[in-house]
Image (cartoon, rainbow, N blue to C red; front, side, top):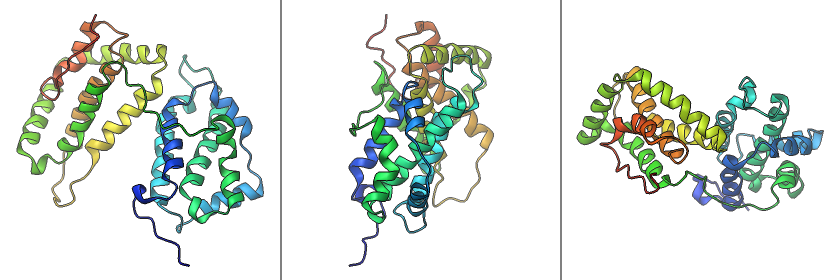
Length: 274
């Protein structure tokens, strides 16, 4: 019997396990990294299973590679190993992320893997996370506002077909030149709050999600874009989203500095405002 081609993640027969692995990424704690590293092995059987999982015939292999990039982005600071707040040796983190990538590849490739191949790739991950729990990242008490702001990004990306989106984008470009120094200082303070409240990786996830939303190219327009303007608008929006993420851990005036420029995008009510 011919194997069914999988063209969309929603149609993947192993969707539950895939989402279980991907959803866990933002919840990987520092204490989990040594456990993942200790559980990972690279014998010939595992290497062969990995090669098969990443072969061109594996389902949605391009999505797998994109997920690998997302993992690298979430743990960029950990891999660089320069920040004072890091508690895990970068070499250990690097090995742990090999276990993470094997779990992603194995869960996506389940239809083309034997039972033993699938088990070999997932074993380190299942050692640390025996159950797949699809739990959204904790976006704080202003989670709905964070989601609303991120949801605006694709509309800004398609501004060539949306006059209102273009108008908002133009306003944001202008606002991005105002109070840059104040925003930079506020962003640094907000990030320290993310570190202290264990939201550092969620911070990275929010920024990557927003960047992906604004970076989606229009499929019908060939006109170029000003990458510098896009970068400025993206930074403005992501700073606001991240300020909302840690709004319960920083002063209100700091949140206002970072969210003020995007007030026209979303209603930034703060239900738990002090």
